[in-house]
Picture 1 (cartoon, rainbow, N blue to C red):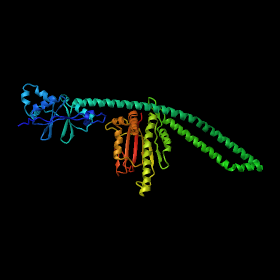
Picture 2 (picture 1 turned 120 degrees about the vertical axis):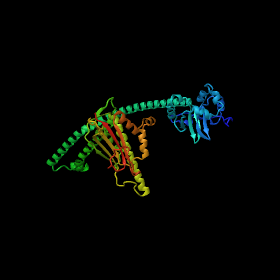
Picture 3 (picture 1 turned 180 degrees about the vertical axis):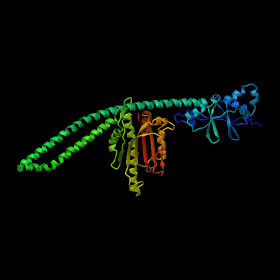
Picture 4 (picture 1 turned 120 degrees about the horizontal axis):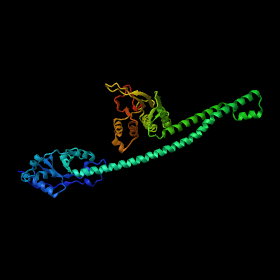
Length: 474
């Protein structure tokens, strides 16, 4: 005999009162719990639907296991047809369900609302109004009204749009601040460069005047071998012999300091360069040297900079943006080497041993060359030329998890959440210059090489991280 007892009333979760965010999941929405045995009479479910007009449907269970879902819309659709009322209303639900069986969309409650709405919209047109079944626990299923899912979806899309708008506004403000700061620093650098130019220009004359005076003094000494006692005492008081030897060295030292200050100010002006609308040819070696000079205060005596520059032509680029890319990569390399040095010191002081490679000197290698990519099969077209800039350190390398996070930050979705320095560098190289941004890393903690590019050289057995920038030559 069919089960004709009154079924349990439906239960409604309290998730609808929560504030939705971009990461909200289905468990935060209003979910309906209404499970009925598949042998329950259709009239019992119809009475429940009449009492609860917002109930979207019923979960069918067979021996405690999920058997399907019968929506209010599907039930009414079959009952209003001729002779269907007598046929289905007083029969078990599984009879009706055999006729009204449809594809049921079952989703976990941990799925984000944005992804769940996309799954629901991919259904066939006749199923777009059907509720979604949400699996909350093993053998526990609830229903989600499709209209509430759509409302939540558009609410989150509105929040997402607002967040993107606010982030774009913040980026515009930050860009304007950086542009103003760049103009300010450029003006200060120009003001510093003027007196440095005065010092540098006059040092040449001071050096000539000093040589002339020394020649005159030497001539006096040759013609007057017997000098008066007061002059002899004065020469002894001022240590004339030492002054004659040290004065040229002092002038040369002032020249060196003025030259270094001039190069530093020029590097600062180049770094604060505001790019034009179109790319212009630039000397990449000069840009790299300028960034290394600016970072000299961060480079300890233990860190060695090795430059292997090839013959590069002027490369069309946005020089100011490439300066930012080189700065970001070099700062990451310096931090990696400094952290490794701290770990080595800790191991020496507290553990009595050196962790890895005790005799290896921290090193950053900068390599540039002109190269061609692999040719496309069955084509006779000339190979395009590229400029390769490799910046590699021999630090501890990156773990597999760290590499995965860096790669994920290159995606558009992650950049909208938080744009890191490497993600910004990736966007500048790929989007603004049409180039390639490749990262390779080998971690000593793993004992094996973890490369993010299949073309890593087999001879590179040391640990460390390498960033390669490929720029097209037009």
